[in-house]
Length: 388
Image (cartoon, rainbow, N blue to C red; front, side, top):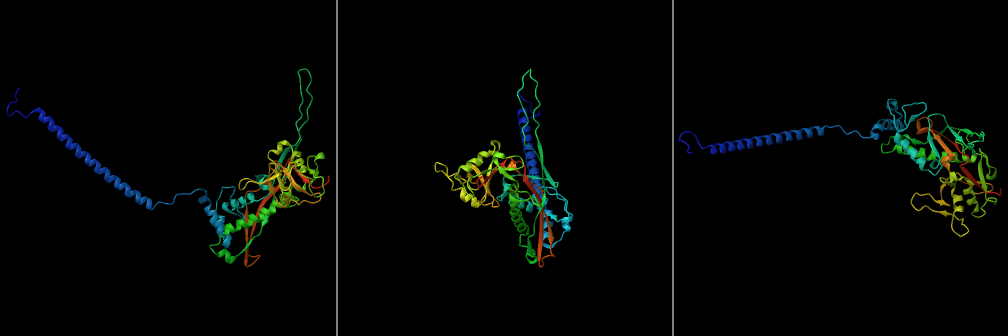
């Protein structure tokens, strides 16, 4: 069929023209959208840059939380200014808000942790004993040191009454441990002087040496009671409340290595798994020369750095406050000190600044409360250098 002249163009041509126009319009629309998105992205980038330039520093962790107290405490140590400490609210890391100028101010947590770390790393019973934090003036330990009775029963025989366990209460009072380092005011005025680090080192050194001695030989009068302050009796007649000892058989000396073996097996099997030898350096020098019947040394040094030496396979702690080898001296202890000795302490450490008593120096009176005593008399045995 032919198309008459003047009545219009070919329909196929019209469709092609319409499609071409649609594609042109769509391309223009797409280009416009891309341009708008690009402009929007540019505006967002500029806005982010402006916001980042004036952004506040990000909050840090616990250190920033403690920074106000640390800054105020540093000012107090250097100048005696305590207004900042009076307004500080701090709750964390065993610190409290109880601040009393008469009894001294709580040290900042970083210094307190440095002192605790130094105390724990010192060669003393603290490294092997049980350490508990208390908020009271004493710590009570309940010990069941007798066996519950038991027996066999059948269907026809009446069951007899069995023995009742006996529970003892051991009270460990807390005593005040103090140190009094001093520094000149000129040194405190020097901003380059690390007053917190210096104070922590001096306090830790004094506290570590003082408490280490008390845990071994303290008499319990105003100080912890050392485990050697308790009565020692022959293991063959040992009773609760005393520490059992094994004699070497020679006055003031060894009679070979057998006494070490006897000491190890005088301790109950339940305690031997976690047992440790305790002695001073002079005694250790004598012990490491001992050999068994086959000529092998009983003593072996640690294979890795920081690993304690071992005697008959058990670790050795060097505590210089242990007595030297001598006539009837109990110079070696062996036991599970985690069960046998308990150290109780308050978690806070206080410092009182005194600029008047030692002019031109400034005294820092540091105090903490700590106590210690034997909590299980069956867990510790002694080696006595005597005939019996």
